[in-house]
Length: 292
Image 1: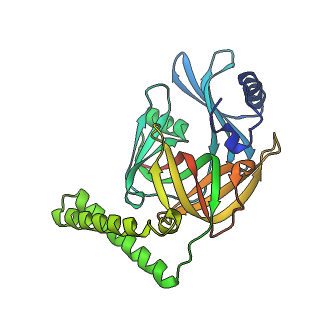
Image 2: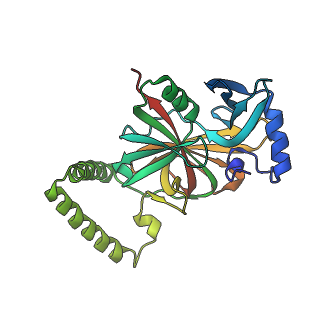
Image 3: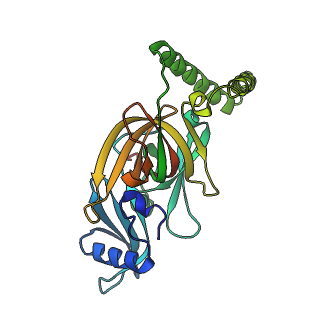
């Protein structure tokens, strides 16, 4: 089974035969998209929504008898908020016809890799030889477990100072990427000072009173991250098949907005706007392509 199937409200489906029966039943009411690859091959996507903006995608081929042969499936969560307009490249996975996107996103301090959720659209654009340039990405994540952390109290002046510092750092990172040696030196000095400050404070303070938010790779899979982000909006969704409740949390992490879906029973603590979410997520993204 897919590890993050429980994140959209299918926690009771633990055995392969139960999941196979579920997917077979869901195929009947799925929204189908089909594209002919060659004379013998029809690529087919089946999308089933179990709550608004949340569901399961099944990918495979359709034969000449209109029988769907499923190759793989994955759960998804969609969000309306644009997360990034940074430069994005897309590459195919080795194992199957799935794709990963890579964002050069300065705000999180790393090259962010995500699972491309609208891979069928990308395949169509590739076959039609139209623009595959990405204008923006809506990021979402699925979590199997998570915790709610209390917020940090900040004055308006502190919030504004943090925004200015982040903006200046992003400008320095851009300059350093273009080969500016002064910017590289400034960033190095800032990192040394920051390490020194954290080393002193961690002796007397809790780590999560120092680290407001974080976004860092977790595990050996490149599209999974450990995040701490401030909750800016909460929506509770109900899986129409199982009746399980799922939280759709809008997070602000390092000034980047994205959604995280987690089963209500897997979240420790009560989510409220202003509090923080901490957990490990599988990052997905919907790429918005530029039209010719």
